[in-house]
Length: 462
Image (cartoon, rainbow, N blue to C red; front, side, top):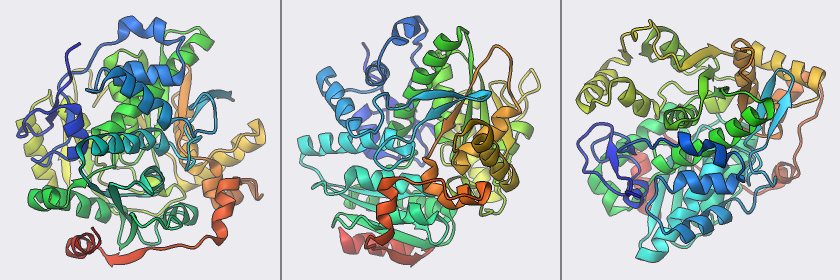
C-alpha cells in the first residue's frame, strides 16, 4: 500500500509523511495539512460493519499513517483503554433520532477520542527521536482539558493551553486548571476564543520561533485530530444502517470550529453513504450562514449556553474550502488573504443552486437549547448537554423517512449542570469525576490578548 503524503491547502509546503505532518501541525505557508488523496473504502464497508470500534480505527488509520501495523494497533488499544464504555462510542435510539455518545473518555468530551491517540502518538515519536515538544493550543472548552489529561506528566512534553478568561464553563475551567503537573501551563486570555486562536496561529506562523521552541499543535488544525474523528462516523453509520436496514444515513453535528463536521465530510468522500451532514450552530452562526447563503462573514461572538461553539472564525473551514474551490491552492490562498483583510468571503452556488448539497445547516438559539433539553428529559428520560441539544434541535428540522439521523453527543451533560438545571428546574446532571473537582486546588496565569505576552510566557517556561 502506498504511503500517504500530506500537502498544504495553500500549496507552498513540500509534501511530507504522516509523522512530520503531525509534528508540524500548521503548515509553514500558513495553510492546513491535508492528505494528498482521499482513499475510497466503499468495497470494505460490509466487512467493517462487523468490527469493533478499535478494529475499525485500525482499518481507517492505516490508510493515513506511516507506522508499523503492530505499533499502530498498540497505540489504538492504549488510547481507548481508559474509556468508560466498552463500545467506546455507543449509539442509542432516542425518540426520532439516534444519539452517538462521544463522551465516555477520561474528560467526558468527544475531544478525548482524538486527543488520547494524539498524545500517545506524540510520546511514541519523541521517545524514538529523543526530541522534546512544547504544545501550544487554544480552547473554547473541551480541547484544553482533553489535551492536558492526555499529556500530563509526560517527560518530553510541555503543554501551554490558552482559554478565554471567564468565557468557558466553570467545570471546563476546573478540569484544566486543577491539573498541577509541572509540564502543564494554563493561560487565561483576557479576550475571546477567537483571540486565543489568532494568537496561536500568529505564533505558529513565526517559523523561527516555532522551530527554536519545538512547538506542536493539538487543536484541530492538526490533521491527526480530524483523521481519528473520521472513525466514529463509520462506526455509528454502519451500525445504525445495519440496525435500521437502510442504505443511507444522516448525521447532525453541533459545531463551532468545523473540525467535527469536517471529519464527516471526509467520511462521505471516502464512501460512507451519508446523504446529509446537518450542521448545527448556536447564535454564533457564521457557518450556518455560509451553507445557507454562500457568504462567510465575521460577526461578534455572543456568549451562549453552548460555549464550545461560541466561535466566529472556524479554524478547520479552510480545509473544506480547499475542496469546494476545486483543490486550487492559488484560489484558496487569495480567498483567505481577502478574508484576513475584509472579514468576509463568498463562493458562487453550484450547478444545482446550492452551496453544497451534502450540507444542511441551521441555528439553535438559547431558547431552543433549553426547550430541547427539557423535551428530551420529559419525553425520553434522556439528558442532553447544551451543545448536543443544539444539534438535536436542528436535526429535528431535517428528518427524512428511510434515512435515520445520528446526532453527535459531544459532552456529558454533567459538564453543563447549570444549563440542565435551568432547563429542567432540577439538579439532575452529576458525574463522580466532576464532583471531585469542586474542592480541587487550581493554577492558571491570566494574560492580556497580546501575542507578545504569550511568547514571553512560553520563553520563560520551557
